Length: 256
Length: 275
Image (cartoon, rainbow over the protein chains, first blue to last red):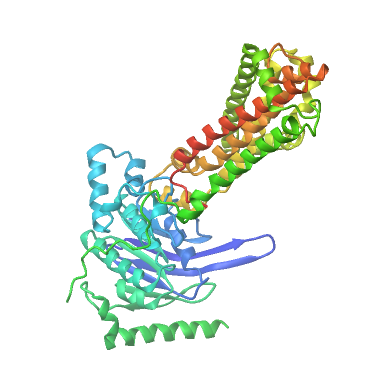
């Protein structure tokens, strides 16, 4: 049984004078504990797709089904890591990470243990009592990631979470994400415009067309779970990277 | 294949808690300039009045005559200052608190925004002092009217500050909270409210200065005690040293109150990024 079933979903936005179709008849099935990376040109509606799965917006037509139930709104079963900084600045690192469990009524030592565990997984144990303003961008993203995991979701939705980071920090984040996802596998939908990132992290890579977005093709990533950063230098990796780059160029030219 | 499971080292640019970004020389220079300016003004004041008698006592009373005024008035000065400070603090706290509550409610319920916004926008530009004749008719010259005016001024500042600040909370915080399991009430208590604390506190500071201005002005037009009444009585007999003393009293009280608020708010908002 598939975890997430996106069935011919369209989304249009109506502004005063214009009707913009952001997503057009998109269908996609995502298996349990699968990591699916969605790549596409910027502004193509990848984020719209993610916001639809998160339940922040409702589809204009079509359905999104998670575990046999239609997505009707945001919920703790679907945690989101955003592109922009969403760490609450008024809470310490530990309190940020504890936010999900606190909202869900978990208390005392159980909550503390959980927070400790995920802080440790992302390597931030020494910064539990620190306020976010004293952290670098990469460290804040780890807080965000730990916060999403600690909340105990079924599905993790990541919207270009590392887009604003430099390459070195980004690689660190990939490693951190892989470590957490290995310790506790989840269904992950990862939106990015970075093909290497998608190939390095994903089990499958979904290529989207420009606006109005549709699924152009789906690439199965043949590398196993054990991936090192050097994997990117392998000929097979590069060949796949070129293949996806070509698809993207093709869809882009097709639209122009 | 090599495992990359060592926790990544903390990034070097994360500065240790509590450090200021200013270089040490800039930090120590500021207060020195302030003290220097105040001290030179005090000296200049003494020079033009007592020292050289360039300016007559009537136009600018000397430091000595101010001291004489203090010793003559003695406990009466304390009583007047206490009366004014009491009114200011009471109206400021009452008006501000009500402003925050109403502002939050307006930010949360659209219909309330539509209902109250026209009234607030119409009353806001009116200087509260302009309402003094009505206030005397409605409440007499007792404390109630003065408290009402001070509270009104603070309420207007806070209600506008709060609604704007609540509307400016980054939507990504609200979405994040929702996807972590927060319900409507939780989003308000645990996200919107803490996020706007800095704006609320800066509104408190503006409000405290306003409350002084409005309360003292209301005291001009009649009061049994208060710095405003003291100044008004003294001005009838052209006793300018008492007038000046009253002004100095207001300034001192306002500065101390403002310092208290800004110390408290610096602690409460220690999480906020420094400008």
